[in-house]
Length: 292
Image (cartoon, rainbow, N blue to C red; front, side, top):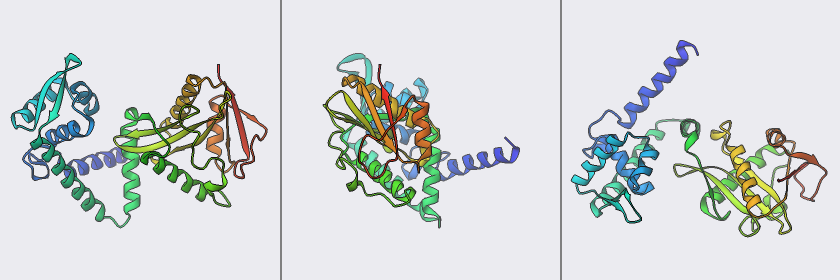
């Protein structure tokens, strides 16, 4: 990497720390530094398991303990042994702590809106933020099984359909495809998975069971901000595991040659191209995989 590239990265780091108030002793004017406010937010957002907080925040045990003790002294939270495992500690927000957490959320939303409003290229700015956050949090993306009608799943599917509309020569209408409501992508026939990163959905995939030992992989999508990080492979492998759990022996999928990266991924993961197996008007490539 050239010196000028390193300088660009370090300029970015300095700009971010200044903009978010990382060096201030009173983040958002609430009288606490950013680190303390971040821990308070994490207790409210992720739950109070102290070991889980330490992993989520990547904080040293002693530093986290000191911050939690300070918040407890302020009357913002309580610390107690986990009722199911006395070796673990759990933090719970008090009524005052919950109010402070909500106030931080409100002020943070205002700060975010103010920042983005400065740019004349707001969508490009948001996309750049997504790319950076996805890269930084690559190892903290979780795959969550959910109903394809849940909010995060519907959002992912909407993004997926919009991309197909842009990339297919004649556009895309989900109502012309089979099972537009994804009704067979839930137990006991199938499953649906969404990749989540700190409350933001980054990708999805569906396992559509036929009820006869066969199933299809459907609607694999990964946000442009998270591509190249191995997330599509993780989603596909999670579908393989779910299929095995459901007793499925044969998996099939279809795709369109307008998505060459998809075909390359399937071939890399051991899928074999086969003859057409459905009358869906959009795909022109068909693959199959037998599970052990």
